[in-house]
Image (cartoon, rainbow, N blue to C red; front, side, top):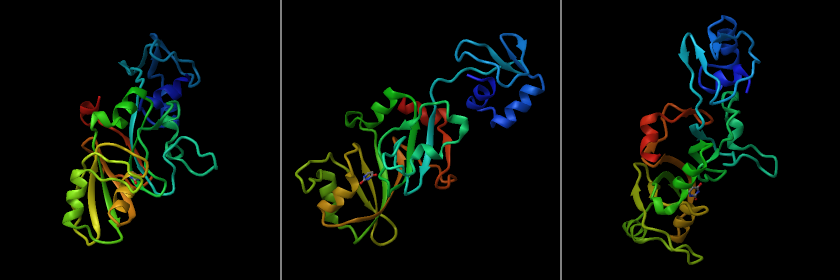
Length: 233
Ligand code: URA
């Protein structure tokens, strides 16, 4: 990998920023000052230092993306529409990022992107009980009977049985918070259809106890912190 790309991917700034750092003579590779931004680095093997500090190779990244509605939670759309990874800038384009779980195209909120395959498996497998929480706007108010039905396990109109879930009313009329521990296709929407209600807006607000960062605007992202990640790893 090119030296400027390596430093940028490891979080030292944009490609332009790191070219400045490299040009200043602050960067050594295996003990030699390197001023060429396109010098080749062997990830995990070359000893890259900036001002005498090692910049260790990080094989995995975990991003919290606030996916806006209209983006497919995939790396490609066969129909050429926008996908979640289109929102990720050059700093991370070296990583082969994909979504850990689905979020419908018309839904928004927390989409976790990573290149760590076993981690994705852990997040999406129902046996691991990783909880996901959603805020929904509905066609009509929820009832006490709905809460009981969610707790006992909703049966979709096609007969599929869901695991127990939690349903709470939101502050505004016809809004609610739903917590599920699995990820069936269109799960939350189908759960409400089974109760003769309808989701008109869906936002994922947390995954595995990690809340979507309120400072992120739709389309923005940041890396998960070590503290956020630790319980999931
Ligand atoms: N449930 C849905 O219906 N859609 C999603 O995107 C996520 C959960």
